[in-house]
Length: 312
Image (cartoon, rainbow, N blue to C red):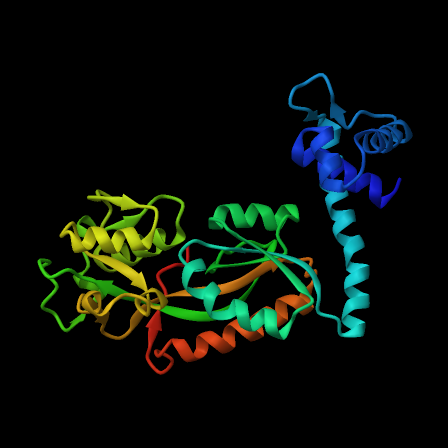
């Protein structure tokens, strides 16, 4: 049994196809098939049911894949130990970022990080929190940037910053005349929200329920992007809440619709998350250092009391 054979098994389990798996592993399909066949012969079991299309794992195959993933991940730790001993920060690093963080945070830190650590090859994907957690556990992501806490024993979190919420209230709205807003003033029923699957949506709902005992979730409209929420609000369809970093990019006319909260200011906790196995920690620490440095100057709320509505 070899690490290479186990890696081939994981590739087939992921792609459910020997040809696609071979392409991902940069080997020929006969070579990959032969190595998996050798492993099955050695163990005297079938890992894959080849009669199904797409190919499926057998019952014992599922257990083998779980263990194989642990073994392959642990094998990477040896290279990690060598890299850390040499002080090397480089290689491929797969990073996921949630949609409500990606458009504002990525431009802030990416150029600085590439300049400071040119040997790191970042592969970045925009993913929901649910997708991120699955991919971190499966080993398809090295780390991610997401709203926390997630309260998952398999995932570790390093807080990067706390990002305050800001009210976006159009001129025809009942709260537009208020200089500052209390959380208790919010009404879920006239709030424009993101679609299901966005953790920012859940944060807003939790915030409203915490202070007003609201149980109904009857919304006028839901959207997949914060930019669309702003446009819908401008059309008089309701107010919305924005993460603070999004407010830095809107135009002067739209800034007239921004209304800040009275203290304590609700905020979301944004963290760098990664698997408890702690692979590639030197790159994770480098990311944390760069991101915390650039965001610290952008968020001007360090000296006010904040609260977080996001814990589940």
